Image (cartoon, rainbow, N blue to C red; front, side):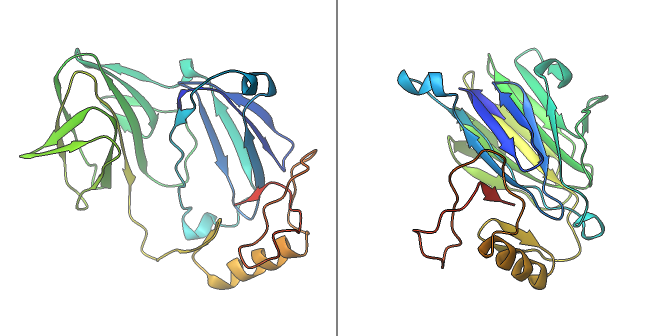
Amino acid sequence: YLFEGEIIHRDSLGVVQNIVPGEVNWMTAGKGISHSEREPTETREIERTIHGLQFWVALPKEHEDVDPSFHHYEANEIPKIATGTSTIDLVAGHLFGKTSPLKAYSPMLFLTVKAHAIGLLDIPSHGYELALYIVRGEVKVGEETFQETQLVVFNEGSDLSLKYSSDAIFAVLGGQPFLEKRFIWWNLVSSEQAKIGAAKKAWREETFPVVPGETERIPLPEDDPSIRPVGQPL
């Protein structure tokens, strides 16, 4: 999800998709996908800013091995909610009678708020575990004030009452917690360490799906950096 700039997404499914501010690229890794994200060639010659947020969302255990997929959502497909002092982009989940079309495999909420005046926002938790990330400005929760780049994680089931500055941009994200823990190694995530081991082996032996046309490859952390990989596995 971008606030500024432009990125071209390519993946091992053959997808090539530009993304600009307000749009959403939603990739489901499932049993394995690799991808690359680059600026368009023509923009690299000029002074520019890229500013965005990228989130990794774990899949429920019963869906961890689904076929990989990719969906792009145009800005006009993302529900907008006007509060009087801000505009909310409802990227995932439902809020205030609106529902995002984004295809998710588990109950979740992801929204961005762009303020144009000092305001208040109450967000019901739906029983989720939620977090607040401040991109710009200030957001007050109770008696505490949080600022740019701070992440605040709330207890499961906590409804949020937020007061924000007139220049604030922030994200609220979270969902229904899973019963099982997740293992993370490099770019590989699973509820089973054996699956991470198998993915490591496939990446090392170059049998992992690759991005068509990519000429660069990121090696496994313990590998010789001179070995060329293709894309970035997830």
